[in-house]
Length: 170
Image 1 (tube, one colour):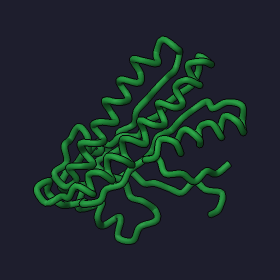
Image 2 (cartoon, helix red, strand yellow; image 1 turned 180 degrees about the vertical axis):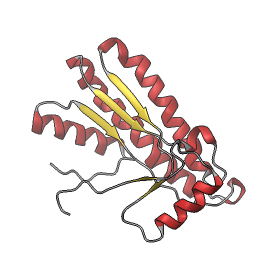
Image 3 (cartoon, helix red, strand yellow; image 1 turned 90 degrees about the vertical axis):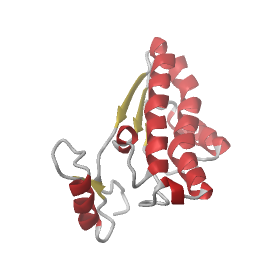
């Protein structure tokens, strides 16, 4: 089941979760993996409000909406797992992507709050904070990654991770 929605619109997120429950009878796991970076490379003094609004909406509000609307289902079932993908840029306070860093730190804090509130209902949560990665779909990605890794060796392995497409259409 593929759903197209705008995660920054609470009503669309709520409807998507309801559609999933309706189609399958239950949802066992929620993975929030949202990330956009407009204004990448600009210091905070040169960033614009529209970029901050976009980053906040996509990277944090969508995660909040999904957690909020799956929580009653998980609490009722006394089962479920929420996985929120943040970024090492949150705790490292990246100078080249300030809005992204601020919002990903927000995802880390939100995950802790969700954990505290839902733990009595046997709902598990986890968070992943990956470092720089090479998307398999972008030209020049490896070159950009090499520059980022030299500047900030954030990865424990000293190299960028790699992403891959997980789609039936490819």
